[in-house]
Length: 407
Ligand code: HEC
Ligand code: HEC
Ligand code: HEC
Ligand code: HEC
Ligand code: HEC
Image 1 (cartoon, rainbow, N blue to C red):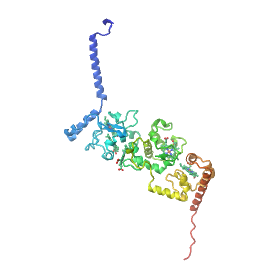
Image 2: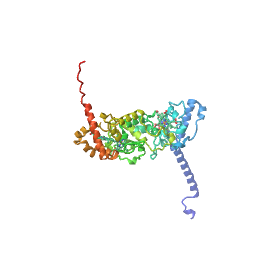
Image 3: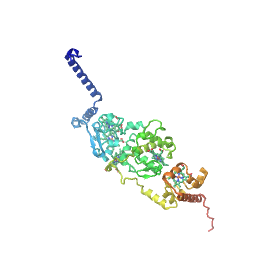
Image 4: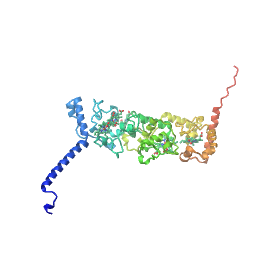
């Protein structure tokens, strides 16, 4: 190829190369300044803050460059302290974030070198820019469970969402200090008798799905057709707890008339129930199961020995009291069965025999999925219900006052 045919002379080429190099340098500079590692900015601000507050000698000791806490047992590498340099630096309790001393109590029980940051806070431990580290990237499954998320879900307590992570290790605790939202939800779970229908931590009924690993259910696995507003797992759970039938038509899960904050607390609890990805040494509570208190155990024993033993043994007392026979039910999901013989006739216009032979509503699900009664057992049920009713009537009739006797 002859020179005349080339587009540029050698001289032009040089000029172009220089201009090109300048352009590259300028754009690199611009990129560095706008999107470069902002941790550098935070570190230099932190050194200034330390200089002003504690003098240049202390400032000289502030670590420079990316910092990280490696927690192999939890599979986490958390670089949060690259910016949050004051985490274990007493004296900066009132500084602005990210330069504030960490609340000390929780770090006394969970030393940073053993727990890192993200096991509690969520976020992307590896990230070195604020948005990324705080879990802002769309495909990162663990967003920072901080104020922004709490606000987005209108959860009153800014730290409520973080308690989801506390409970990944503390799920077998009845009470966890510092996790009030979770504690409240656990208390509700007992009071409302969720176990009558759901297996939780290995024990409970079979009417609803096993909830032991409910937190692993993927967002795509939920049906949002009847959920208004946000289409997220948390929103689905809150809507479902507030009114199960509004979300899942035909469900027998009762509407517990929960307040919004109760529904949110339960949603957070359910989302914390993930399959054990926490190594045994980080799981709190022994044994790894929910154990009844001594009082609950004594109560169960007393009822099992009493005249209502059949209802307890058969599992009816998970949902029904039979007060006439001394059987109480923690959940009271169904009505007291003492007057059932009469009530069924009044309500359904049929005998209990017929009701138990072809039940409707919740009992249709109970008797087909959870308590399968054969012909003889159904006869026994009718007999037991009659005995309960007889006792009920006896207690209802006012006791005749003994005739007055003259002394
Ligand atoms: C590049 C610097 C940087 C990194 C890395 C970083 N942060 Fe932050 N963080 C900040 C700044 C700046 C603020 C204050 C402004 C704000 O709230 O976003 C902050 C605020 C916070 C807050 C309080 C605000 C809230 O939403 O509750 C928490 C909690 C927090 N960071 C946790 C973390 C955790 C956990 C990590 C590691 C996964 C981390 N940060 C990594 C810079 C950083
Ligand atoms: C064992 C759980 C746990 C660990 C581990 C933990 N934190 Fe925290 N963090 C908390 C709790 C609890 C609070 C305080 C909430 C409150 O104010 O009641 C908190 C508060 C904060 C705040 C204050 C936010 C604000 O606006 O008040 C920041 C920032 C923060 N943590 C960052 C970190 C960083 C960085 C690490 C790791 C070096 C870390 N945390 C490790 C539980 C933890
Ligand atoms: C990665 C697992 C893990 C996470 C996450 C976690 N904890 Fe813990 N927690 C533990 C372990 C393990 C202990 C026991 C410490 C020891 O070995 O003595 C403990 C101890 C405690 C204690 C002291 C127990 C006592 O009886 O005095 C409290 C309170 C506590 N955690 C609250 C919390 C709160 C609140 C959170 C969330 C902000 C949280 N924990 C997050 C594992 C965890
Ligand atoms: C009378 C039985 C019954 C009781 C009591 C009950 N549920 Fe349910 N629950 C169901 C049934 C049936 C479903 C499945 C249909 C649906 O989505 O409503 C369900 C669904 C759920 C789901 C959705 C699970 C999933 O993966 O789709 C959660 C979470 C849940 N229940 C939690 C609870 C909690 C917590 C309580 C106690 C406050 C409770 N349930 C009490 C019957 C019950
Ligand atoms: C998982 C909870 C649950 C269990 C377990 C359960 N029931 Fe029920 N039962 C209910 C509910 C709820 C109702 C109220 C009707 C409805 O909502 O469909 C009911 C209604 C009844 C009624 C009609 C009472 C009335 O006053 O109208 C009878 C009778 C009855 N159940 C008997 C039993 C017997 C016997 C057992 C044990 C073999 C049992 N149930 C176990 C939840 C349960």
